[in-house]
Length: 114
Length: 113
Image (cartoon, rainbow over all chains, first blue to last red; front, top):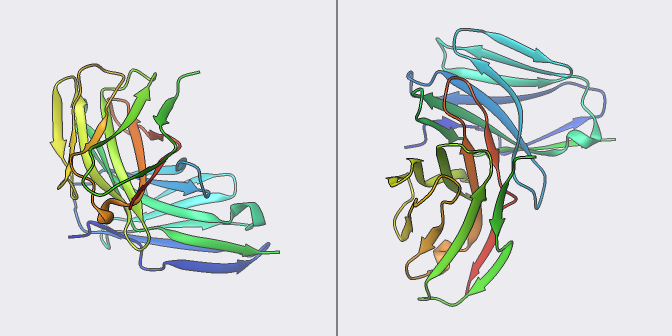
């Protein structure tokens, strides 16, 4: 039972254009959402996050949108750069104060073409 | 700087052998996790711990075990390695409190032959 889903295994965009990565979740108890970026042979690194009480969070070229009613979030990268080429994982968090846990999606491989 | 380290980075083992992957963090986080990354499956949770002597099963725990004797370490043991356990394994830790991020190790690539 996949609680966090990324339905697009891969995405290719031109440099300078917008990249939109999507994520769906099923558990309404998730209260925090994160995006991670992963290069080959490295561990995932945190990119941006959003609390369930917000619908948008922006950090430079990266914006995350959350639609709680649809249980859907998306990551927008504008403008896309070749260095953004990586696997992007969506994660949903169960935060219990002392006990926090993240459930990850299947990942989307983004290729930004020069 | 605080960090989370995994060892070894690469391991080849034979079917049926017991293997232990090490994870050490200096963040002083109570919450630690083991994930495996496989094509088409993303990062799947194997086991996790919310503190010393606490361990919990994740979605793909069969054939794996963990122990937590101190805050810094969460070793992952494959009791009898199988070819299906060939994968890249990541350890992670998260601080307590609201809205915190997870920090990952560099990963261990395990091949079972």
